[in-house]
Image (cartoon, rainbow, N blue to C red; front, side):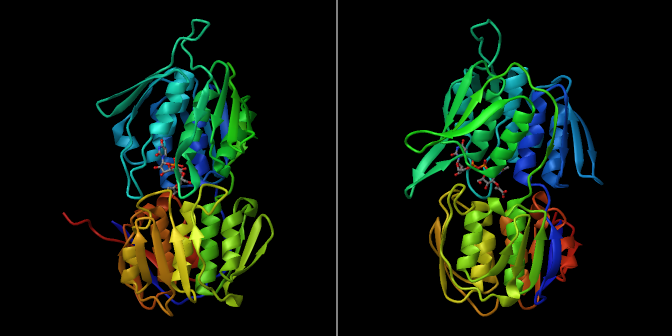
Length: 444
Ligand code: EPU
């Protein structure tokens, strides 16, 4: 088992280059299944989840050539030779369910293992399935698998039929929670459907725009709109077939945000390069409110912790363009050592405050108010401890805490981090952190 060992106290300084976004590439790879021609992806991040997805689509008939030197991936799927995504793969990565839409769209049938819950919440896929049904698919759940078949359309062809889909999951604390993944699956199913599809309450996350951009290059007809009541829409005119294209994966806004916190918390100065700050709006606003000094140059973000005095700041997580759920644990890590009080509300994933107990082991003063709310009182110093990463973002946050804790912090189950951060430990080391990997034998 992999663990990360950190001796806190170093101010991080230097440059770091941001990779392609994990949550984009995991959509773009299955979207490549929608054409028999070659799709060339550049700025592909070398992540564990990407390797898992490559294995999955190769089992479905894709031929993949991934050049790790140039971060370029070529995907060609002359034919879908298998429509089954097995439990063995889907259980390791929830995003595997993204093959459902492309399989139903192109192969007109699919058998995809039902993904389970995960540590950040139960994460149902009811909206994904409702979307496929709205497009006319017959969906059955049998022996742990989603079995889907496209209907017969007005031309007597087995093909999905354009329709209206609602991406709303629920309303909570006055906000409409939409689904990112459900929107993605619906788009990928609808692009090859017969007729027009309107997705109401569509996710506004920029990674969805990255997917739409690539599909439009492939010949799809997709656009965003907004109705009279202000509800965000995605409108798709179905086409007969798609062709190949070349597409560069957007920069990872969550990776960039994590390094911004690393600079702020260690009182160092980091130049975060190859990023796109226009996708980081509310996070940057909150960073400013918290007293962190930075220079926003669009493709570069320079965060100067040496000139900053972090102060308590409240955040409420919301779907994009609100404060991202994937940045709340990193931001709150900064709040554990900021002056004064902070509050956090996390209405999107019910278990995403699970990390709190690990921070309490390091001396953080955090009180869980209820499942979705916590209050923080900044302390002068965190103290190092053995802690456990429960998921990707909580794991990265524990590393951030270790960077300023007094003594030796050991982050166990750190394999979660390599699912979403390219070379995290190496990058932090280059920036001056005292950090290394260590491997221990699992308990038998
Ligand atoms: N939900 C339902 N039914 C559905 C779909 C979602 O109830 O059919 C609920 C979820 O349980 C959650 C809320 O809707 O309460 C929002 O979930 P969403 O579907 O938007 O999340 P996701 O698509 O499963 C993606 C990212 C997550 C990120 C969320 C929100 C990928 C691979 N994953 O998940 O990323 O937190 O959107 O932005 O894109 C991460 O990167 O660490 C991560 C977990």
